[in-house]
Image (cartoon, rainbow, N blue to C red; front, side, top):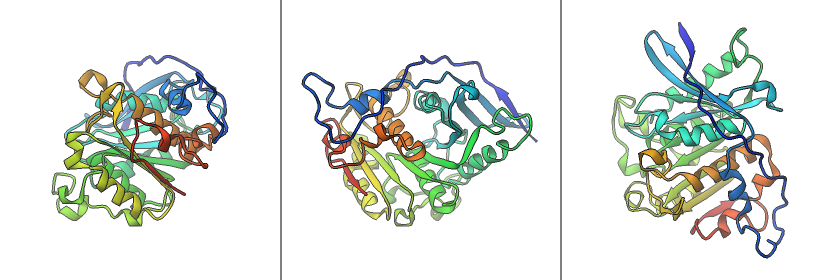
Length: 309
């Protein structure tokens, strides 16, 4: 029987999101040339808390969510997260708490191999069930029709596989450094190689592929590899290739917390904007990815980025 428990409260500054904008308007002299990135770099307006889901003595999932759902003016969309190889959710807590501060409910498998996507799919379905479970903190507060699959490296493979396996559940997809197919291999989550393979041509949901110009990603998830994945996606897709994040050269592990060597600042901003755009219809966030002049493709820190409707 799964048990739900609280982790110590993690504080997060409460800041207001900048007001709605209109894509395509000229930037006034002296104004920020990338106002959408700047807006979503800041924490969102909701205080956050964390929790765990346990099976016996094993923690199966970590949770990041708004601490007071009554203050959230919409049903909270679900984000299911997949770790990179050997990683744990707390290595990405800056990103996951950022999502929670914007009103999203994040569930993250604690497994260190998530390439099959099975545990990510099960995690999302767990929250769907909790939305109608009397006494659950999530009872009646979740939007089970707005679900994002998000992951890093091997977890990005898992996220893509969830989108393919469960298209009626998953509404949108974000991948951080989705590895080249040549790196597919067996692991405890993938007894055979095909368990950790994805076919991006089978993805029809709006998709945001993020990678870097870093030396590690030049082998793992190079711009050319990510561009090929971008071209394969049948529906709306965005390719974001970042040069520097937080003033530091971006690379494969930049999305991890700064305390362990990551530098996730700018990657967090556009990832948050993507969720706001695709799950909540935020018109300001949409300007980063749509219109005649998407902010992402004109941002000098994101060279070689592409958008297709």
